[in-house]
Length: 372
Image 1 (tube, rainbow, N blue to C red):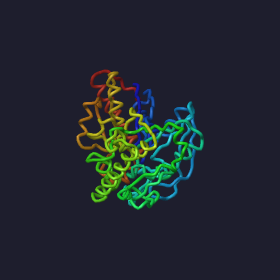
Image 2: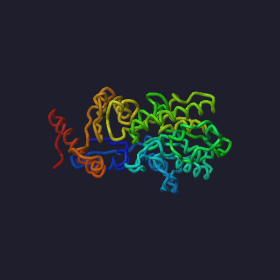
Image 3: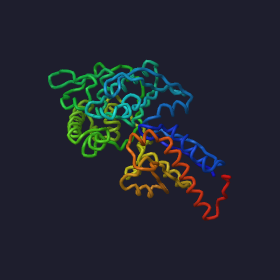
Image 4: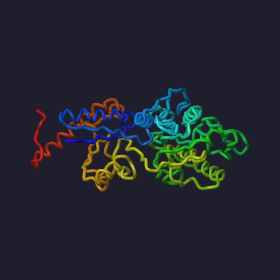
């Protein structure tokens, strides 16, 4: 049997490379003679830099930056091994949800300032292109922190600069964005954002309401964010002369997509958002498992999804070519317990799933047990 293993990461605990190794181990426990090809997938979130650096023979650069809660952290970006000279920045490495302690998760105050610092470091290397992976963020500041790190001034009606890296809630008082101090080198590079372009900044389906609660926002904080990002959109639209609130991709990474638009970024629209550990009714909307299934269906290949949990209306995934799905959890547990045991759970789930596949093939007479 030949098996293609192509996972995204399990948000906050297992990157895509580790997930591929765990699934491979589980399959081989059940079927030692299986031929396995591992293709870890990167969607712009955790593991994005490593995936592209590994694929091109590039290098990782490490440096300290400001983390999402304002503390110094060790971060990184990549320089790809092909031409033109390209840097790749992973938002999760500077403003990721996994960098925000569970008891500090409040997207009203987390910042993308560190993302701007990564971009500045890449500019120092005279790159011609910067690819920004938008995924797994723990922020909802619209990219305001990133803009401040790059030299922009965000000011209130009195001309006072908003607190540097103050978080999304400070945008409630935003009156203008001054780009005169923006790093001039940004005009000489092409910036591409890899994101889920279906995410928008404002409205009922904007990032505050859809993703704010996932990042720790209470109902009150969600409304504060919605108001703040509405103000941000209004000022941004006046600044660049075009609508951004509902622009495709403007809501990526808590609205950082809007910040990238303001500095001339463009979107790579064929990269999709990850499943974030769960499979549910949102998965068919451009997320990695559905994209894999769509392609596999064209070649008549069955697809099985292993997920952290099974969410609402997950059966919608049958319509996009996913033949079966299963949770890796074995018993009721807390999130912390599940994260701690994630590698074991994924390995054992892959083994169990493959044994079920073997039973099915035995029943229709198309498989000979070669495990002994």
